[in-house]
Image (cartoon, rainbow over all chains, first blue to last red; front, side):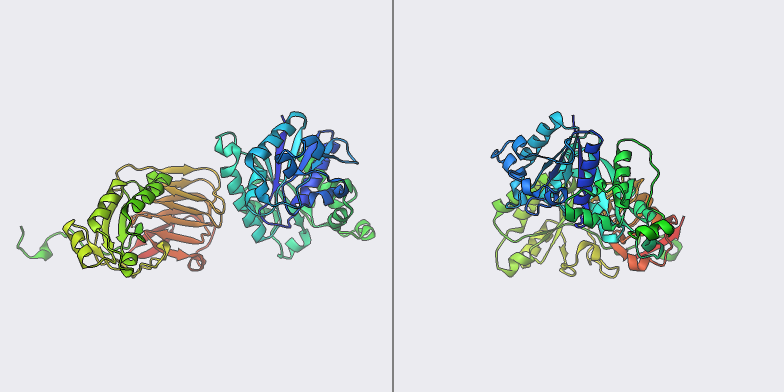
Length: 270
Length: 246
């Protein structure tokens, strides 16, 4: 049985798709057969971040409408043969998604995948609620600012009341906090919420902190999940997150301000 | 019957005014079967909530459009659905007379547009309605919540509500009795929502958006002078919320 992970936030622009791409690639690189599904029907982005936009033939909605089989729609990643992408439809809207359709796809994928990563759209409407409905684990991506924290809190409420697990009275979805676009020097100046502030409000298990990093935008533009950029701080942060999710103990990094040494001056990117 | 000087007697009673939060049935049609059907649908959605609930019947809209309605009939219908009508407002002479014949008082339209929580201390209904006094002793259903109450969630307890986690900003918790919060209160907490002025709110960290007891409320602006991270209790004394350290 596959483990279904939803990457969600409520608010837009916090890094859900970047996270989905990185986590999926990270899990696949460790040898776990992983599928990543874009639920943002109408605003398809995951294919760009994964760099497979030229290879999209069929999409999620085609499979739901039985216009294509799952195997036809899944795109195998060129860098890692354990990773498959199921893109969203760009020409439809979220009403094209049905609970039965999504359930059927996830059930079929569960047969031979180890992990299924669902990239949720922003908002709390149909696309987002369907992306999380079948989940076992939830990665709640939050930026260290008040509106993002409140939206995440709202999403956590929905996760605990409107998921399949909640409706069937099963063990609740495991929720993890991923704090993204974190900038320790701005926290120090009091311009940004600290890790402790966010955790106090959300009372959630922290899976990792992803620092604000130029490498993320570069990675997105080049269609490479940032986790493949092993030199970058964001790439390392995601690698740590994958390791922690798989049960390894790794100390948290990128929370404290980095000492400006010779090395950081040489590399320059922060 | 005592005819002696009242000063030497212990006071057996006193009249006080209170403002209560009571559901109002605002009628917009005089089609009895339609009303009956739609009431039924509403009650099915929350049968426990509506069971034996006091209800004020508002005929203002109907009378404004000159739609005649038999008040006796409407009372029979709402009773069938488990409500306890406590009077009417906005009725015409005939309807007011019918109500009086059924021992149901006529309420003033005063404050009819004020949302539930906006009841200000000064505003009170002139006629005391004896049926509104729900006995706290009958069927107390306390509720215990151990998970954080997240933004956008609402929790309602028919008795006391006990929360052993945080109540997030944007969440709303309501109880007909007392509220206890053993975490941070950042959302809204409304105790004594059916008008129990003796209910209280206890919390270990007060950062609330709004607190209310029996409809008397204070917003976070008024609360900012109280330090956070300190256990407090909130009670109602003479239409004023009192916040004290525990």
